Image 1 (cartoon, rainbow, N blue to C red):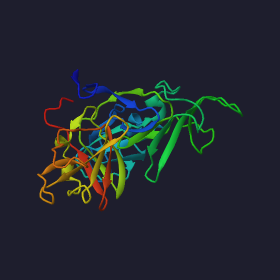
Image 2: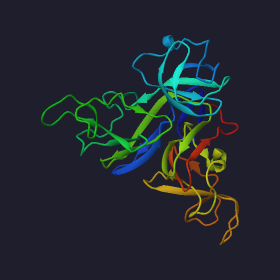
Image 3: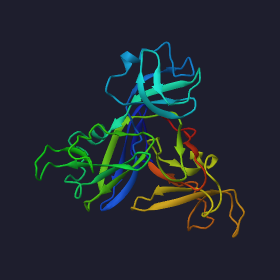
Image 4: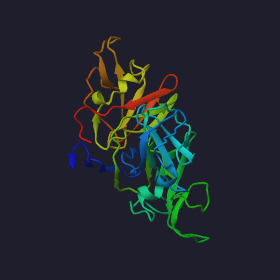
Length: 307
């Protein structure tokens, strides 16, 4: 296996990375590994049909799956299937390559009994995992079962009573927040299979919390994000918010140069003048503050990266 030291990571095709949830803080991070490929091939029609597949044998009932169009980089949920066709909103064309993987869940990611070690308690005392839902966040915590009326320990959601939330999906495209209510930092190790293809993400106006997908650090100059974001200055351009490791965020933008005071073309940081920031590492989870209309972004697989 190849080992890359930008972050502690082992790749090809199984890997891991370690993220630190800061004490008494919100930490944005990405889960850059996932489940093994359950099905793969090429679509024979524009309706996600693969006549060479047997999805009824490959995909298990009651499990949530996501299909990625490797040709376009886009992904979507699998809503159902028959033997040769997936029921999905993903745009596909005949000849497109695809991969299907089971979704990562809270229980598989952090342990059915909270083996990751997040602070347990109730909705007001436990650490909280904030998972983007498109119109807000699911707020998941580990209930220690102490209190009245008593109930078994387990994963719960704020506002959802005693319902078991271990099976809540964590979208592989999303950056998540860990709200740490304890003072000590907590290292969390994510283990799984590595994606080796670039992934496209839909972004809307405002803040979008995203997963880098790659389980190793990648320099801004190598991400290719400048091809997808609005360029400008710190006020007019889209901003990339990347955790700085100390509980805050570095805010990056890309300029074509010029302006006043004049700047050279490239990646810059808010408050850092004309200093070149292209060598700075994009966090495992990051945010894009989109100033204009909705669109999409994709982080490239850097040349020479051994995955």
